[in-house]
Image 1 (cartoon, rainbow, N blue to C red):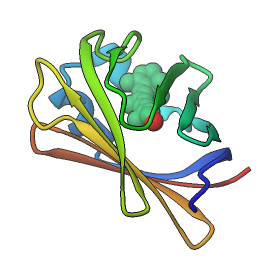
Image 2: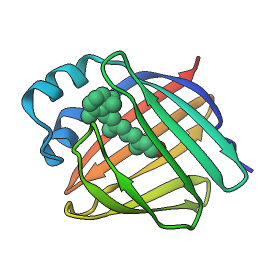
Image 3: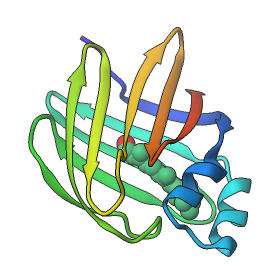
Length: 133
Ligand code: RET
């Protein structure tokens, strides 16, 4: 079974700007967010996950169980409420974030020694890559 647990440092970040624009994130936040290299701290315990996105500017925390829809408050990001559901799509951890924004969600997977994260919203895709800290 796949285990995404660990501390991961961002090494690349493609089209974060387009993704943030699709979310309607304000100019000032985008300018700072573009500069930071967040760290992901993932704790995977059976079907339970804690995913922390840590940066010098702001942090974001999400906790969920596979297959159980939860209320997500994207506080500090675009400050919206979503009904979010995370499932395994083969070896890819995939989330659909139902709410005001169409086609919103993300996918995490491991390839080689690297963690990949794709976040999508209304046709914009941001591609991030992480290596173990
Ligand atoms: C930062 C800095 C402050 C502004 C913005 C940020 C974006 C964070 C994002 C986090 C996504 C987390 C996911 C977790 C699920 O596993 C870096 C906190 C906009 C987009 C997909």
